[in-house]
Length: 492
Image 1 (tube, rainbow, N blue to C red):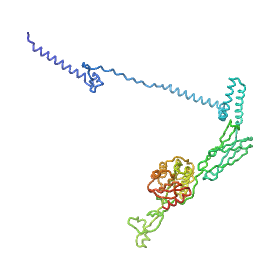
Image 2: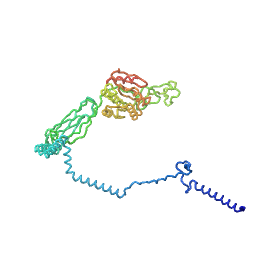
Image 3: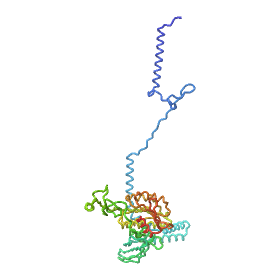
Image 4: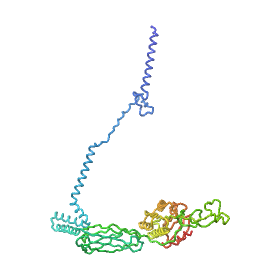
């Protein structure tokens, strides 16, 4: 055997090493992340190298489905504009057609409105009789149908005709107290050139309606009627509108024309006279003089000896020179009051029901009137009705509008505080079944310096005044007891 050439062996070894080195570099370049030629990592493996099978081969990757985006169809602009123009043209033409044909269908529509439900029933009966006559060939049914339709037509003729009248209504006075008389007057004048047949005039008064049958009136003649408005209960009574009624006595056709507006009659709650409520807690030079001493005010009271800390501007030098010692002026406080009254109008909170609830409203009205006479500001809150810094008459109007129902004392107290943040005396009027904790929570919304009074109406407890936890509690049986208990509160 011949020995291998060492030069060829070295070249062969070098060639094999170069091939191995180039293969490693190629594999590294193919697996480099971020390379555009690198295959995507296997989805099921966090490292990008998926699991292999038992034979050592990697499973095939599933194909990725492409994302399909469907755009919303868009109507071309010229088509949308054409549709809008077409709709506008059709609307204008329809309105023109209605205006042109109004003289034709207008009287027909008015006539159909005159027919009462009874008249429609008779018309339906007439049509049904005609249908039966056509099917059964019975002349009797056709005669009944013709009579029914003729009856409605004849009644409609009685309602045809133009009525030219002037109607005036008047209520005097417009504001009364419960039980006071209130009368009204209605005057009808014939303004046509010819005489007028007897006419029926209806005038709603509250929940009822007054009917006046007027006699025949000549041209320019007038007729007047008087009526009485019931005022046994507090509230607002609507009088009017006055309407004329034309038609038949059976009520098959009824044509009504409105001639006046609604007039409101205020029935104020019953009140009693009270003693002055006293001064308040807020200092004001234009307020009322109290018996509390002050070092700076307008109401001079007396002189006293100077004490360290007194304002030297109030030293009375002439009297000091005579007395041989410093004397200073002493004044009386002048304060103003703002009274806030919150009324619970829930009949369920009172043992006497609606009667005691009305008494509570009368209590609030009496206190508000007294505050107005004392030239004090006041605020009333009762359900949805409020009155603040206004006249006594408008406050009574607000109480007249109150309707009994569920009340939230806490919310109403907050409403009163928002209307009168300078409240100096708060009075809450409620019933005997209201828990005391609710009364405390409601009055607790006012400042601690405010005089807080809770007035209950309970016929089972004795009339009196007591103080519980900084709140003055008052109890009355009826409105006449209010004067005595308020004098007791003012005395304390």
